[in-house]
Amino acid sequence: VELLNSGYEVIVVDNLSNSSVESINRVKEITGKQFKFYKEDVLNHEVLDAIFEENAIDAVIHFAGFKAVGESVAIPLTYYHNNITSTLVLCEVMQKHNVKKMIFSSSATVYGIPETSPITEEFPLSATNPYGQTKLMIEQIMRDVAFADAEWSIA
Image (cartoon, rainbow, N blue to C red; front, side):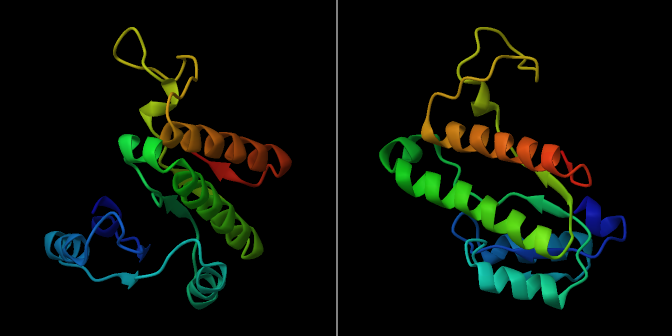
């Protein structure tokens, strides 16, 4: 909403596994602005590459991923595959198209079960479930990418 209201052109890629078209429509209604929406899976390298070819993309805000802690315990391989592989595919496509700015949506679950609150980024990392582990692994991947290529800006 803030990006649209600030005049940015927004492109949404979402397979709607964790949301619905209603969410997309509500954003359009709230802002009174239109934006491109692709009902696609970030795991699909070819489709994602075509989206980057078709659009002048400057930066990515990465929210794609499964997000239920309990479910991640029941089906960990699904979470590892979806969350980590989709991030790798996204980074590969971004690199190919020289898009090196990303905001990654992590989670407080990377800190496990802290003894005090509020949680700060100085807390030790200790994910206690597959969902948190995927976020922790992706944070490490992002650090490695930024270390290998200083042109990457990742927050």
